[in-house]
Figure 1 (cartoon, helix red, strand yellow):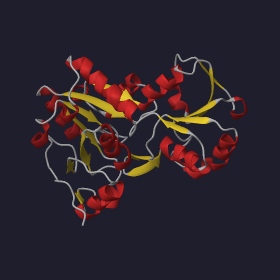
Figure 2 (cartoon, one colour; figure 1 turned 90 degrees about the vertical axis):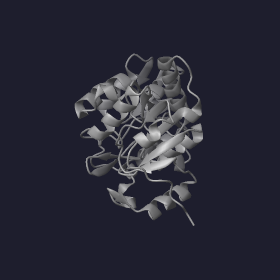
Figure 3 (cartoon, helix red, strand yellow; figure 1 turned 180 degrees about the horizontal axis):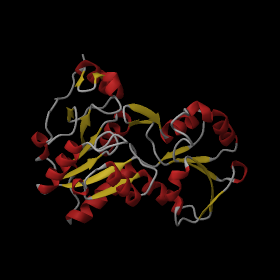
Length: 288
């Protein structure tokens, strides 16, 4: 028999147990179109009580441009102290490969991830690695549109750096595919993939390092809480980094859980059991 973790209505009942929050962005503080005001206010109040909030995003852009994007969605700056993105981690990986000849798979809007780096964009035939930041047109394409390209990349034995390990994200009231879905397909074809963001450790290590710099001391991991809506990235990432997770149900798993604002707790427990991970607690939306 599977048992769901406790469901809480308000983050304030949990907040005092933590000094640092590492919060997911898409699905927790905004939906890809507009901010969730209650989530921003909850994080602001956590900070007002002495806590530190680092947004941890599987975004294929550096943190500073993402701040401007969040401004456009209406996410208040008072909700967070800093941002670490999978784009930042991708840049670090490329810095270790000076002069790299890169095939970029992804939309033009992601090009800022490469600004200032010693890399060269080349066609597949000349590439020595691939950076996948997304689908060229995520409004209409699926990973299957990339199978032929991925088979040709695999035939050349190229490493793929996945700049956004998310498989899908919410955009308004629907889901769209992300770079993680393309990278996963490449992996099934036998290709080598480095995932730059969640659920892998480097992005959490950098987020805690940023929090430590802001606080003047490294926080003990038992005083660090992650908040997220994805079992695959947020919950698995928290478990792998040995920190607690507050799981938000009204995100990418909402349709699996029944009604968005009244999730099926049995279905929720089953999802956690299948993944082999459990959050500290569950909340429908992030509210103080």
